[in-house]
Amino acid sequence: MSDRHVIVGAGPVGRHLAAQLAERGSEVVVATRSGTDPGLAGVRGIRVDANDADALSAVTVGASALYNCANPGDYTQWDTTWPPLAAALLSTAERTGPVYAITGNLYPYGPVDEPMHEGLPDAAVDHKGVLRARLWADALEAHDAGRVRAVEVRGSDYMGTGVGVNGHISRQLPAARRGKRARVLGDPDMPHTFTDVQDVARLLIAAADDESSHGRLWHVPSNPPRSQRQALGDVLTAAGLSPVPVSPIPPLALRAGELFSPMLRELKELSYQWTRPYVLDDSAARAHFALEPTPWEEVCRRTS
Image (cartoon, rainbow, N blue to C red):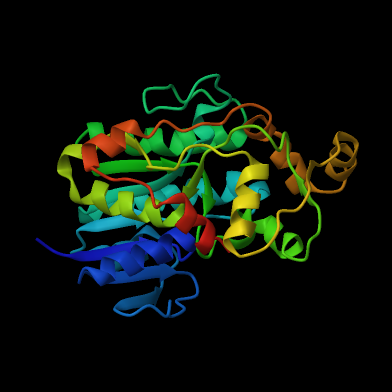
């Protein structure tokens, strides 16, 4: 069997995935529009437009796994960027035969009043959640029809190395390290699951390798929930710094910002994640793959 792996996307999940695969001796290709060398030992960067199924298929022939780690960061563009990208990735997997392992998120569930587990329906009503649910439904339909081997892993808000402005906690750090008050979305004391990007990569590898895990969702093993106030304080303490005051962004300020910021209008649709408990049930993946999350103290030390 081939041990060649193609990763689309060089964000924090894609980079951790590439590094872990290379460390075990796999042949690893990271496909991006720029083709920039990822700077990881044993990992080759290649320039490919992942929206072009023909070009991506040429790169993926002979691969054992194709990983969707793409992350179009601008929410306002998701409706135009995700459908053709996901269609090209799925088409490539169907044509060339690798396991198709997808980095998902929790948006498809929408607001829930219980810990999120894989048996919940994808019942989101906001357009980002509906979109991500549709992408998984398309892949699952192809899997059930025998056209592809697909699996999706879903984690909560990211922490860990390299997350930067893409993480709710890490985006607060530059100011917090200078002792500045943190202004956060929603209730700063609501319990919330945070997932280490390193653990997302670990589960992607385990799920791609395990034929018995295909055709379903898996939740990334994550530490017990912490509030935004607690998580930010823990990261600062791990860096030898004092916690800072944490306050919610005033509703009036948010409403005013929405008038001028399309991104804030997009975030408003996801505000339920920060105004009620947002807790991940990862028991199925822990049991099936015998995986545990990276210890919380280490997650906090590595968050940047």
